[in-house]
Length: 338
Ligand SMILES: [Zn+2]
Ligand SMILES: [Zn+2]
Image (tube, rainbow, N blue to C red; front, side, top):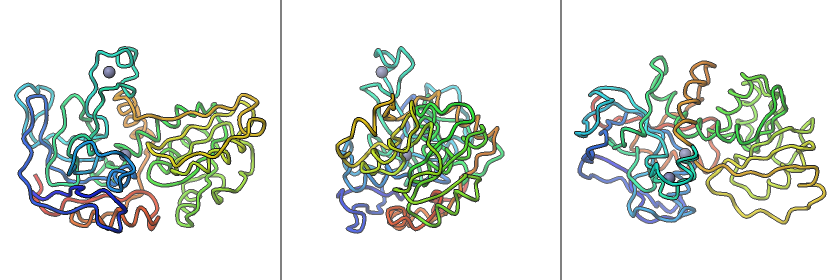
């Protein structure tokens, strides 16, 4: 099969990825083999390719927003049948026994493993997933539209929960890419007022089209104080900016797995009056199932731009340069549909 692999992590312009032929993966007894139909492009794939995240598996195939069909089943798996459509997401293993797992915080499991970082992901014709970590997908949404929900959507949902937005509250979104535009739709459907602060003109336009109340630049002051804010842009310099935009008691949640260093914080204007700064670490499977159900209920839809699987590098370059709004999705044009 054809697959992309990260053979030399570094700036995307320098070509850290190469497109190779390699043997089809063989599912372990607890795994599914998935014939990939669509694979969303997440900013984390860029972090893995550029070496912002340490190498966990040399030559890893990125991609953790995978929609495909079950092509083979490990001998211990009972819950899936050949031909079932499944989603493969970021979290692919937790030990189930540590203190975090036991209290329902498996996203903090020290033994956790991730698709497209610890194990080969969906920038390929085939991939594998432990059946216990696969998702069933709503039937009425096509492969390309549903793919970005699997990481961008789920992480945006966890970030929204971590931001503790009160009912009918005022939410600020810093950065407006794949994750934020899905998070905004859910927040709006639940009655929030949403202000977007981002640099791209296309992203600002999309925000207003989706029903956000305002869309300005990243350093602008939003038109009203915020009850909650989420930092989606991986830019630490925006942490104090967003904290200053919070009302008393407000919460800033930082959604990304990677953030450039934050500058010094000024206690009086940025933290006092019980403002809170929170990070978001991965997600639980429960987050994933809740979000997929809510997204189906509220009609949350990704704005997508498709690329053939063979042009993953161009998709990542365009992501880095901010050349599209919404989310990029790779479509497997190489192997016949099952
Ligand atoms: Zn654990
Ligand atoms: Zn992701």
